[in-house]
Picture 1 (cartoon, one colour):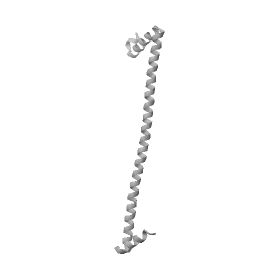
Picture 2 (cartoon, rainbow, N blue to C red):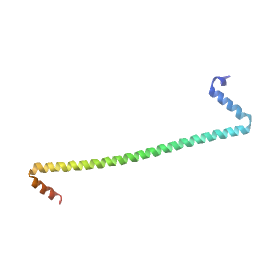
Picture 3 (tube, rainbow, N blue to C red):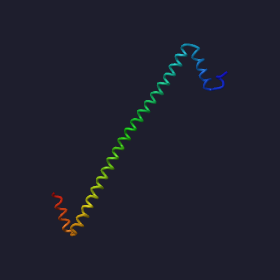
Picture 4 (cartoon, rainbow, N blue to C red):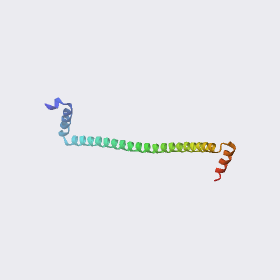
Length: 109
């Protein structure tokens, strides 16, 4: 018999024998199978929602990190801008007192 050669076929054959014996057992079997399918589906849907929430949190965290990096970049850029401005004034005027006066006057423009 084919059912003896394959354990999956044998399992299905045994189930078929059980549910075909009487209507009540068949209804119990179908209810049990439906409960298993419903449970598996709800677990799948919960997993998908969890993945979606995780992806959204990851995107939000990435945006926050990018904003922090951008702020640091702006601070560094402003520092170098000021640094090169001081170098330019030093090359142009050469006199430290005069540079101080020029920087002071720039703050009021």
